[in-house]
Image 1 (spheres, rainbow, N blue to C red):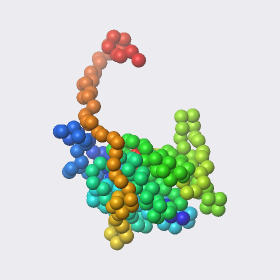
Image 2 (image 1 turned 180 degrees about the vertical axis):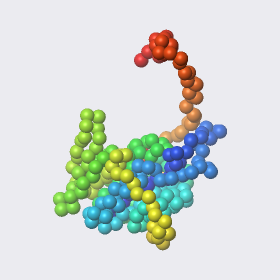
Image 3 (image 1 turned 135 degrees about the vertical axis):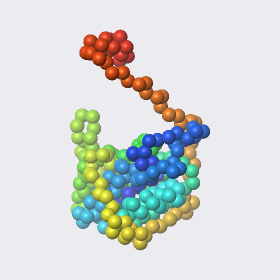
Length: 251
Ligand code: AMP
């Protein structure tokens, strides 16, 4: 079985985000970019499944500008067998990504498609659900544990829900999106970073995959959240109680 993993290049989680002066979006030039943390977890899970002998190949895929190749090389250094980059200009919204992923699934025919539960740049949390809908595959979202049964062709997915843990049984092929507690992703070692340079990285255009990139969404404006007012240090418990009584907002 082949596993396809969708990895997105995003502004690094440790970077302090700056809004562009023209308010069209977030500044990404001269900013450290990394693999979306949930995608690292998705890739780690796919690698562990392959290492346990339940899968034969892990293919990492990414859509976006030419810079996505760097993120794919990181994925290859972590252990993916090969990579696919679909180069697209401009902003990509989840439905377009889902359509491209569906087209790639039609070409590659994986038994499992693993995504992060959300990308930390747009926090959409939509792509996995959309691609599962387009493929008409079962979906296990926000997975905190994944167990495959190759003989029965099933995946058991545990997910954290409000009241506790929900366990789903999915018939393969299926879509899984990964939550934070699923695993601890590995670091790419220097020898593996070197090896990754010679791994296969194939390129497609959306046209070659017969996918039209268009969106009914328009970002009107991106603005920074209001600045937080400075805090005050109170000198006594009485003063604190007084402030809580008279100045705190009633919920
Ligand atoms: P989102 O729905 O945008 O929050 O993204 C959820 C997941 O979809 C991400 O963690 C990735 O696995 C996948 N994804 C979204 N956009 C892309 C992209 N441009 N390239 C590759 N994977 C993506």
